[in-house]
Image (cartoon, rainbow, N blue to C red; front, side, top):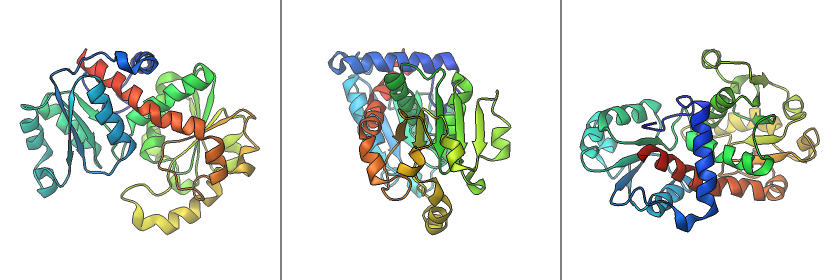
Length: 298
């Protein structure tokens, strides 16, 4: 494994190896292996971030390296320099890159032209680091994802949903995408998914029936702000609230990758009831991402 560009590119055994290592790293942060000692890693972010930036900066340092943050305004990408030229330059100076941006192809191109380990910290296509942390959280709560049923509600064609779909295909657990027809995964995308672990419904009650973990994300992702009013109106029936939760298992957990907009995709009541799970997810970004970096430099 030379890069982490997507869940799609991973095999099930690679995901399991990363999660096993993440669990070990979480047990004792002070004992983190200093595998990045003497290394400089760049965080190249053209999208804003809280959890991703903090978890990666802390993670790089806990592994013995140095982290350098570069926003779009800090480098020539913001003025139109081709990503392949930026990659060629940075590949001669730094040891790894963590990129949070819009186009998936930018991350792919950077990995090819830089020659250094490259991590997708979020693109419009996928959010692999988030899903690894989520899977770690499910392991902690249930002991395994095997035999569990996960439902993703809301915008079923967003980057987080796509990464969940690939995780389901790679690991074999059942995933239900609950979304109005306008926000269901595209047919050409679903045609690429092997197996039959993913189902899609436009009925909120059916989506949560017998579900172990109910997952949601913001309804208006970065870059979709102009569609805000329309999106909120269409997605309103998919809010995770007390009424909807009655249809799930009595011990079902609720997951959210944050930031959460209380009163929109989730009520304040449910978020606070499930805060232990949701903020475990946030913490696990650190441990899962450290496991990814250790794996890339082994």
